[in-house]
Image 1 (cartoon, rainbow, N blue to C red):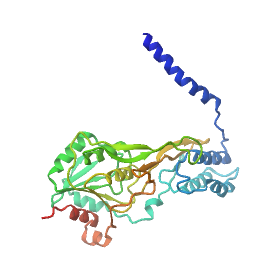
Image 2 (image 1 turned 90 degrees about the vertical axis):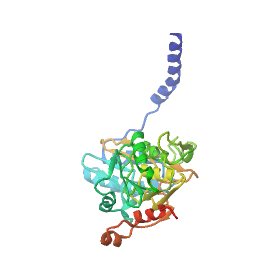
Image 3 (image 1 turned 135 degrees about the vertical axis):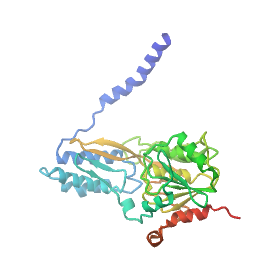
Image 4 (image 1 turned 60 degrees about the horizontal axis):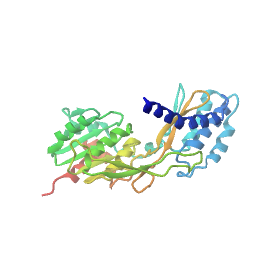
Length: 340
């Protein structure tokens, strides 16, 4: 009983200064007017967005550019357009503005690049009798190469799913992991999957978080390690197929896999999206999502703009439509063939 009372007093002593500090600081309040919502959004990004300095964005100049477009009697649609255009200056797929009627987004990070992906061709390689384990679709191609298509890290995979999948593919000479057009999802699943490709602990990067309102106020980089899974682990060669639509948690997966033994990245530079997103609310109830915590690679370099493959290759669109073959898959098969 005495120990419980002591522990309770100890916790109160820890949190009391925090509560007092919180009560002494008043966040600046903005009116629910076009100007008030503009100022609130600009301030949120100015103090909390994590890539202003890295991307060399003059956020004060951006304010000067868009503030004159704000008028007291402008419509909600007009205000939404101005605020969305201002956020697009960040060139970040993790930045969105949500209203009840629309979502502002920036998609040029992949729209301005070759697609390097055709879902109908992927279905052709999978065939009709492919297996499905949670978010994984997989099969054994006719040259004894394993093929896994994983199109969203929002589709969960458990340890049991990975054990069964990799056990089934264990007879294969090599493995293709296709994460093209995987726009991301849950980092837990990307790490869980990557842990099947190493037999020892691997340093894969560093994380930081904002510690103040300044553009460069960050914590010291904290190392990120991936430990080998206790389940079935892949011991042979593997090729990861990437394109510009490989984003966010998939970008994290690609970064992790490039530090794994026997893994080759093939395709286009990934889409990036390394900043963990956070949300905040404007006075009118609109919600803004933005990158708040940067993720660096093992050399402490930003991966916000994507990761270069080991082998850069675009899909041959003529072969895709005339011969119905995916030249990226075919190149991966060639790389994985057992040499006599």
